[in-house]
Image 1 (cartoon, one colour):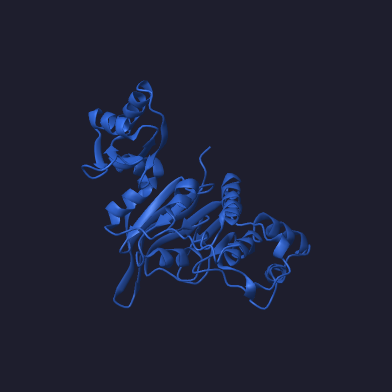
Image 2 (image 1 turned 135 degrees about the vertical axis):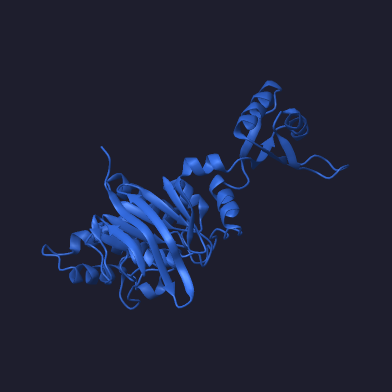
Length: 323
């Protein structure tokens, strides 16, 4: 059974003065899908997310959200939730009080208590529920923002850099929540500079550059179009691995020790996946144990660099702001 579209955008254009933020953008997001939104700074991601949340209106084009055509007013249908540029929270209130206040604003007839506790549990903030938000790290604020969105039982969830400041435990909580929502039919639009998060969560991705769509489609198609990639190879016998890699048709050793120096523990080879498979077979037949083999740059990041002509933003590694 084909799932209905949660977002259907055609020819969306948005300008701020002489700056064109979005230029004839098309976007399709299906219910039950996690759709990644990627692009360098200034590509138009934040503007597009704002349109989906009803924080701005397009100058031209047609936008349908959850089956409703969005007009020229700042509004979206019920069932849309999320945040852009970080969640809005009351710093003087505790995490539980923030969610309770939001639940009351939603006029829940049966009381918000159970929903608040469940949302806190989902994002892993139960133990700090009575701490004031002003003392929260960036990662904790991101998780609380996700909990706030969950109170609405969204059918379309918009998330802007939700993994900012997250430690491994927080990241697992967020990934579990997002995957669970998608499995239950919620459409998720996820904007991030973290290619590992996008690769782990998204079935499709849209890449923006200077306000235009330069790619949209399944990750598998993007990987197929990436062509030859560089792979880091670590084995039990580096010298033999270098020789076998050099002899494997379709492969080139692109990084190795300088002449006269000892062979390092790892080498970098370039070639298609089929050639990599052949190399692994040759290594095993020669009694050389492959200990690590993986792309230096993921297919998604390689495509990002090629299609946008920019350098990818570094992944967040700020442990000081994590909890």
